[in-house]
Amino acid sequence: MDIKQLDDSAIEVLTVPELKKYLRLYGEYVTGRKADLIERHVHSIEYHDVSESCSHCIVRCLVIPSIPTSNQKKNPDHRVWVIMSNVTGNVHSADCNC
Image (cartoon, rainbow, N blue to C red; front, side):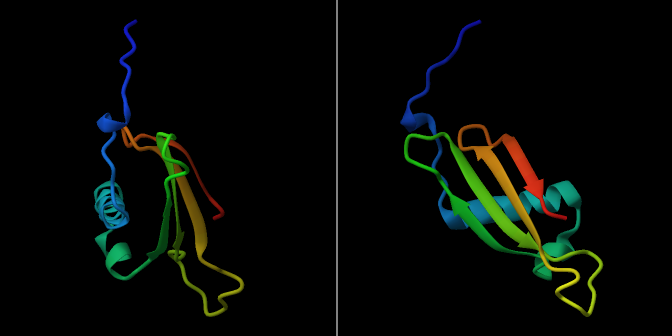
């Protein structure tokens, strides 16, 4: 098997606004629930690139539950995080506290 070596120039660097746009569009594509994004069900998106030498990044956000209640303490926003490759965009790990 031939393993291709990549240097930093092969990694496409995304700015935070570009990453937010990508995640928004990907969310629309995967779920087909455009209303969730327009109505700000997904919010407080944060991006961390770990380090310059690391080929992965961490993205986390808050998601409003699909069935809201009047008591916010009983049904708080879900915390979602994703570890993904900066090179391929593949998700390596993800979780939600829902």
